[in-house]
Image 1 (tube, rainbow, N blue to C red):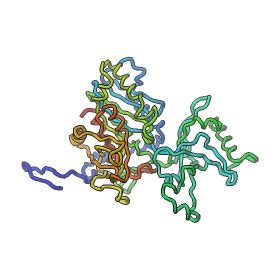
Image 2: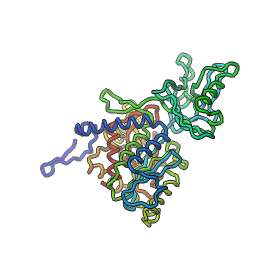
Image 3: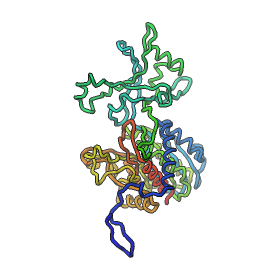
Image 4: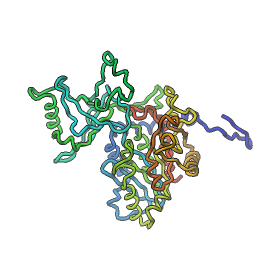
Length: 461
């Protein structure tokens, strides 16, 4: 480390980029591991956005949050939530009429069932489920792994929650791939083509009813066990997700492997932070939104008018007498979304001097997007310095980087949508290995660092 002497002390000139594990004491290490255990329970339970929102609402109510639509008036210290279609939820701790917002998203790449998913191949005697992938995935990663089905089915008698095929279940589901002995032509295809979207069909059954076939037996079982018929799949919302449980990764247990770190790791860190936001002068707001993985379209997304409605309800019931635009344009926000972690196996796609690394802390990033910073947010220097200074004052381990080399690609976050409303916004999230895969990897230390940053920001420290 380059240093100079100043008044008998060493002044650091070079930014620390070593592992955070060698910069903490044993108590902090114990706190990190305890926090990670809670996170693993959360992510094992919350495989889809509906489950995340229900979990958040349950924990919020336990902590004293009430539905804002049922509140007549609000005062400093009151805690409220606003839910949209069971797929996004906003929490706020009321303070002065200045907004401190942290936003994360609760959806992850997956496979959705088609409107009429159940088909039968008479020759093979297999019943299959047809799927349509959601978000950016490498399709070949979803074959020959155990899969689960989560979601809801709506019938005249009400809503049926579905959770089938998880690791603890006695059954699971799978998409088959071609055996290597017969895959010479398949292996000549590009990675994008090796598994086609229409071939992501799940093996669902193989036992026929005499003279009726396998599909008839599948529909019979569904009707007997769940009281549903084929038509109900048209309105159902069923998502196919990896059946794996979250587990520690590495002999030192320093990392966590799981499906859905993007972006439920930041969502859990944010939830943990807002539940401890009690001492802020400003109004602390945590947004958990849907549809980020498909461009934030729809009424449960970051672009939805529901956020404006939530702020207007707070403004009205707290009797702030402020214009909504005044609240938005004077607000400050963190976009809590994951970023890429440097991978030594594929280091040619990274600028190693400007990449984020596992276990070096929460990554605070000025901009995202691709190419010439298209489709991304670019924070101004003053606000970026404010967030960095906040981390330094609270001794939070942090780093900074870019998602990859400039002309290779990139990705955006919901930061751009808050910035369009007038917020000062910066991205700060957790580096991920294998992002958008069925089993992503994060560092326990980075998870905890993100929680610490969101907490001090919302508390106005």
